Length: 169
Image 1 (cartoon, rainbow, N blue to C red):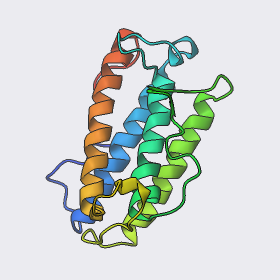
Image 2: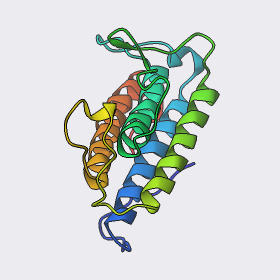
Image 3: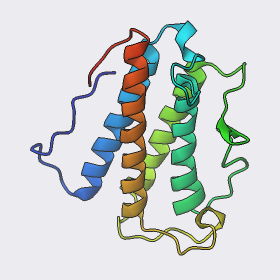
Image 4: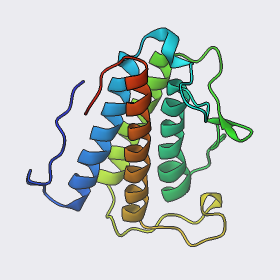
């Protein structure tokens, strides 16, 4: 799915809509870039840091899970760091592009519902996500998610270009 960039000149009903538009846009751009890569590039790293496109895809799903469900909502999450093995991102051999893309999209639907049903000033539920610090407001969580997506989409742009995939936004 190709989505138009949520330009600042497009009217929005409020800050919540702006956050959701950008978050949806960045998520869909990540999905689009990963779906355009050939199979042999999905588990290959083109960077010295060693991460792969599938690992990035899985990581972003878990980023949303950690910040929205485990953090803001205070839900018990069985494996909040399930995108890692030790100090590295990890994708099991049986995990597929389609499965990881579906998981990220489903996480995005959940995030959208939580955000649409909450005020931006609402403070998250205390819990282990905050590691003893006071919980953040939904607005701060969303700001963090946006920077995480934007930063990683930039990384993926470089990897996609090196792999001969589509370039640009």
